[in-house]
Image 1 (cartoon, one colour):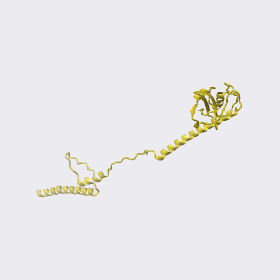
Image 2 (cartoon, rainbow, N blue to C red):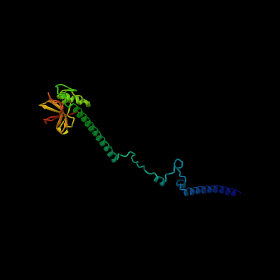
Image 3 (tube, helix red, strand yellow):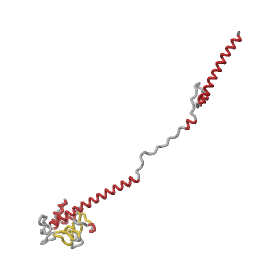
Image 4 (cartoon, rainbow, N blue to C red):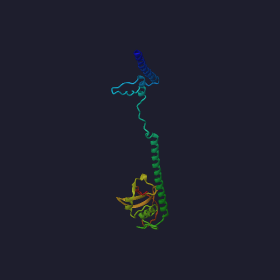
Length: 221
């Protein structure tokens, strides 16, 4: 009777252990089939008595790639844009020059038109118009038509003018005649080596030949 008791106890003990091993073995085989290495290897004891964390698999490590820097989202200005900007600036400058030239030509036309209206007006020393003139009074009167204010004194008119060489003189510019450093006479350049002026006592305003090529050109527009 005692022997049969121990036989039943042995069967219960070892039979339970066998079922446990079979359960663990089945779990291990299933884990290996679905690709979970940590479970397939089974629990690993650690000194603290807790299961170790599952290591990262080689395939997972290989999937982490370094992040390359992205290209700049602000590209540098293209050569075509720079060329376009340069062309625009050049066109603007050209347009401004054209406007200035047109303005100068318009003022010159006014000056020559107004002085021609005064042809035949008598010369009177110190006179500034509207019917009689001396040389500086004539240029003062005519230039007032384009908004340029001059005094009735030849040296002061020359001081206020922009002096340019003969190669740059234009119709409508003033021409000054000197005796040494003193400017004693002034006229309005008309082109073709001629000028409008009020010459001297007993003469009248008219279009006259420039008699002395040493004159100085003065510009006001």
